[in-house]
Image 1: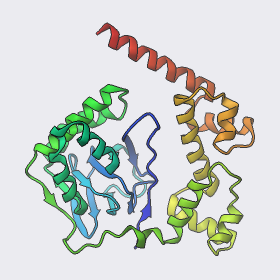
Image 2: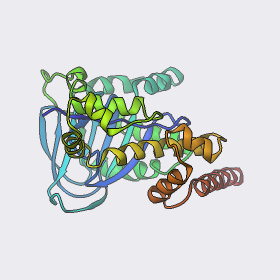
Image 3: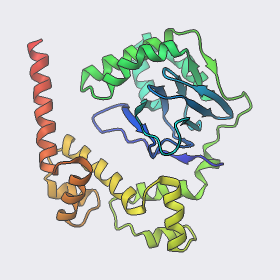
Length: 297
């Protein structure tokens, strides 16, 4: 079974991504991405898959995967069960690592660990439970606090000698054989043309399918419709522009590919629970509060 490509979105003002997700989730499937990933299970039990490895997991399960190594965690609770905040995830690129090591020679031992991660590394559950508070705090931290928490997580991983290699030595991590699959070509095409006039009929034609077949195919692989997926990516980019630039809401709307401000506001409200202007105002209030707190400390 060919794994699906996950498009990891790292904000312009951040060098890595840290987040929490429930189960089920659109990325909780057999998938891969070019970034390294530290993955901690906070709740539930089940089976996990890394390359050609299959194992059991429970709370505290801690795995580091390397670039383009397929992985997945399936809870025993069943497809209809919901596990809030099951997964704690940290994702970073090789370029980010190289910049860190260049700036801080003390981090050079991390390189050997990351080389091993090409096959996947499992750490003791006790360590996973121990770093869970760091990972949870990292997902909501801002500014220099994120860097301090990242260093804490990396220090625990680097200093742990109980590392278990997962995928077999002959397992072939060749992203090209995955990227050639139809769904990954479709996802890459959507990402590259997000700001343009993307129509499902055109993408279906490029994929060599009828619209009805493509609709079923896309929903099966992504868990949502073509429009829902497209809007989700556009709104993610809109959030970044609202937080990191002074562009007006109207400019942000057209920059990310919406051609109607009313529709943009409606979609943003549905996904974020507030209009874009309120989102920006609250984000700036949070930034000011954080700076005042640091100044008073």
